[in-house]
Image (cartoon, rainbow, N blue to C red; front, side, top):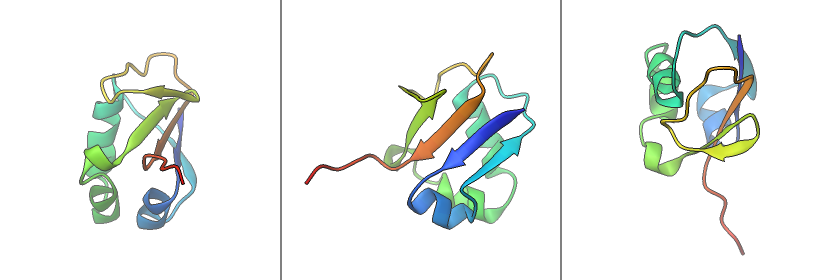
Length: 82
């Protein structure tokens, strides 16, 4: 089981702040593909990966990051300074 967390507009599109996911995904990208296949709201949230960042166990990661032993994945838009 994996905790998947969504922030900002990702959470708004999916309609959940977090969920527990049963997955066989080997990488973050595999997880994204599984989520996209669930429902249209997930497909919309993950339509443009260049507009998303990912953290694996609270560390910034790339979409090719392995998920073996990971407990938490978070998706969020890039932070902008001001």
